[in-house]
Amino acid sequence: MAVTRCVCYRMTFAELRELARANDWTTVAQLSLATHCGMGCGGCRPYLQAMLDTGATCFAVRQGDQPPQPAAPEPWDL
Figure 1 (cartoon, rainbow, N blue to C red):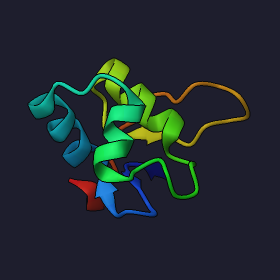
Figure 2 (cartoon, rainbow, N blue to C red):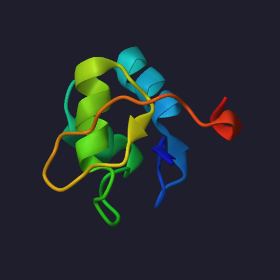
Figure 3 (tube, rainbow, N blue to C red):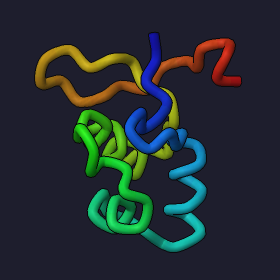
């Protein structure tokens, strides 16, 4: 199972990455203020940071306090 989106606001990391690039957003705070992603349950915040840091849009489920690791997308996310 891969993490590819903010579940609360139903936006994919691919969509969010494009918005961040188009608007020169470099922080989770900027992204969250504009899209509300990361402000619901907060579960996607580490993934949003990893997306901004690496450009990856698909991540393995985190284990404990480990940082998110890029992963191959699931077939339904292609």
